[in-house]
Image 1 (cartoon, helix red, strand yellow):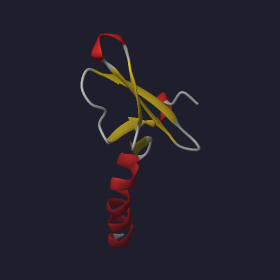
Image 2 (cartoon, helix red, strand yellow):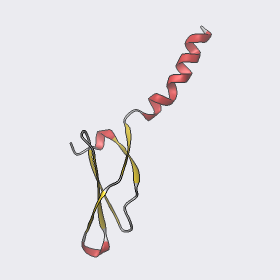
Image 3 (cartoon, rainbow, N blue to C red):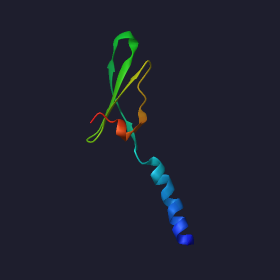
Image 4 (cartoon, helix red, strand yellow):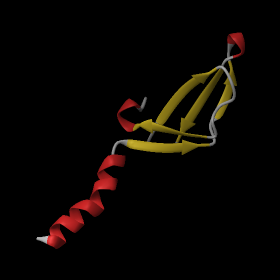
Length: 68
């Protein structure tokens, strides 16, 4: 019983991260009003993010919000 509980506790952090992805090195495009369009893309996911400042080098997204 202790082994089952130990395995369940070990897998808990993995379940908490399910459905999230951290991506880096976005493409940046300048928009009107000084805003920037940040595009994070890999072979599976495409995410866009608009910001007033500089695009973050890394950003975590929820995979269900992917545009692909």
